[in-house]
Length: 339
Length: 295
View 1 (cartoon, rainbow over the protein chains, first blue to last red):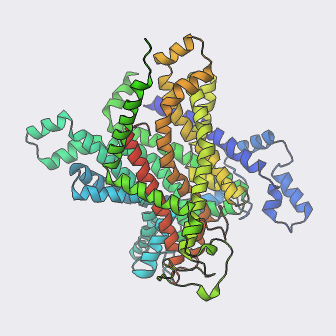
View 2 (cartoon, rainbow over the protein chains, first blue to last red):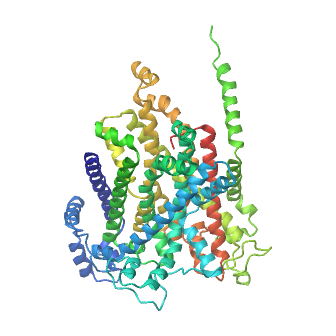
């Protein structure tokens, strides 16, 4: 397993370097002068020239890339051309909020996907299964921003039961920043009211990020359960007289969850990608909103850094998921040991 | 004696089409998908004739009709310039479908060709180069790369199409690659090689026909995804610009007037959902009817 993970990590680094070359080249070959874009049309020529010098824009492209890579490895992703702060610092400020949102939506998505998928698979072709099927199609097809608009409309304006904007209701004090994840920060200072209020703010954006995942993952789990129900070991378990609940929970669910877990890495990274739009709509001060704002303002350093960070998370999540799948599937573990 | 080969092929093929159609039509969801796709396509094609207020598609101002809620006269209401939302949605289907068709027309041949080449030369440096490049494009959620590229360019429908095309071909390469590399050592390919057929001939005449059904099915499914990503881009303001009635643009422009004039954004949003849902149902129906498992 260790050698497998090492191999995967090595390959991911290769892919990430490729990705960085791609996005770096794209930011440099766009029409227009990046330095001029960053400073605006009114900036004097000498200021533009100084920024050009600072960004090494006068050097040939490969040299520029090597300089960028050297700095990036040392943890310096340049200065954001818009916020005038180091990009890494900006990311550290904004990232915890996104992580919190993605974790929350992953919890919602996983619980609901397992519930819906397991029941729909166990009672295949029942009314519940049909209902779940319709939900699945709608959940997969409707884009996140459409969910956001619909939920905003329903909850924000018709049933005013959930807050729709930001992280906290006005009037509540922001807990001191320790982890950056406000729910944990609130618990650390023992403010339950802040914690609950914050969770309420998280429900709608997290729901927008998770509906598509619930639909897809529950579908995969359902297929797995139907597949495994036909297997001999389930028939054997039934004929032993093992209670159905125990068969479901101990024998059926675990192997059926493997294909579902296998797509979860992609899905978590997909949620982070979705957060670009969803955070902007719900005014959630996270990494996604920051990145989209940076991109729309042609902040080249932040754009490159944001793409690279997404690539890194994508790779890491996929490796973690592979390890979990190997844990769930003894056949893979045995094969790994054999090789 | 030479038996005309058509005698064997024709009835069989007709039969298989009939069987596929039977399988397709026995699933009510596929039929719903087909009908929604037909509704979307027909209203896109005949928008100038069918739309109740065809002048609403572009720059048109009629303040006496501005901000009307849904009524019999304007089923989906009107926007702040007095343009009929229903008519704009019908024209909006045009832009979204056009975008999907253009993107797929660029992406499918390119991606398929590269995938076939890589699959045919499996294990050589050609395979390595092409497939490693696809890996790079697939190493990140496509929406993020699309946003980044579009934001670098000047926002327009054309540029957003270019951006999506740039990152969509790897999916087809992957699909074509998986089929081509599995067929690489089949006897009919080896036989063609043995009699000295040109690699391009083998790729196009021997391997490609085996990929057509999965690729066609993936295309149907992808119309929905491309519309989704295009709508997301134009929602952020990176696609078609106002007054072009692209659906995503309409949602984002209308969202400024929520909640008082909710119809300006809710109906275009529902139209997007309807379109993507239709193509997904249709694609799934075709996939099940053809019993394709690769996708």
